[in-house]
Image 1 (cartoon, helix red, strand yellow):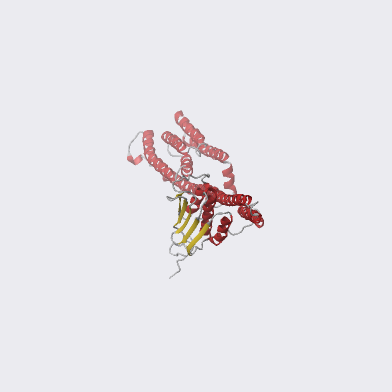
Image 2 (image 1 turned 90 degrees about the vertical axis):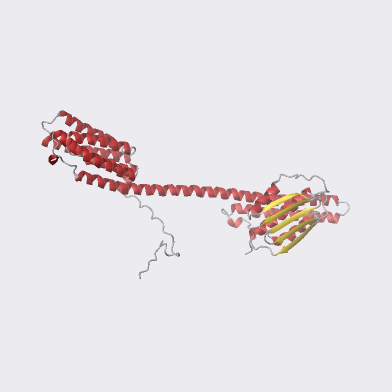
Length: 424
């Protein structure tokens, strides 16, 4: 049994999908015609005028001597009208076909026979510049009208209705028009195929540009969140350390100096994080100059907690379960804890305990609570709200949610749930 597998065979699941072949590049003659369509139309109309005039003159010299003048006028007008209308067949193919059909019918009534050249050109234009269906309909109308007009005009000229002397339409004009329609269908189909490919390429290019703009907007939003976390954390801790160091300057100079050292450490760490973050913006231009350090993970949470403890915040960290292996999830957890503690440091009033509880499970839960307000005291947010918004956006990446608000017994609580975390 022969092997039926080939590229694009649907019976072979391993074979690549079949794609449409690219259109062939136009040859030199076709490219010249495409660059000068008006000149081509003038050339075709002129050639038709010359050929039809030669045929009309030959027929007149052979059998037209002594016939009525109206016949010659009708044939000449039909020839001129057809020639002029052929110039517009590219832009108005249906109108051109109708006018040429009327002119051809008029000439067939005036003189025996049908001139298929003008109608063939009109039918070709219908197939190429309008649609295949309209070309076939036009061919059927032409054959039907010719089958009626030719016998009637012959009967009118001879003055008899004897069926043995009534001529029928010749198959030669029908064959010529059929060939023109077939050629027009092939050319029109190729043109529409190329136009569809060009339109598809343009749509794909627009979609690519839209994806790039969306990616740029998402990257800007990510950088904004990271910058907010880094700057807010660093400034809040440094302000708290500076206040504590100033208060201890006279009572305990050693601790005041230690606070100043901690301020420098926090500042340098914040600057390093900012350089790493901003370095990602220039990695396409100068990747070697960017400090692309790893993103923070849950392993760095103890050091983060120690920073807040140094700033005077009594933080307790409790964890349970195995941390997820996904770096993205670990970064989200780290940033959420950082933002929650920064808000506590800035807005909580003398908290006695700040508890960070992280449960690495399904779902992953992060709960940060403090007792910095007495029961019944209003605790409206004092900041801009960007911190809570950033936490919600980070949690939304994994289908999570953030609930933040005052507790019934005083203080504040931030509860984050990440249900779509999968351990690898």
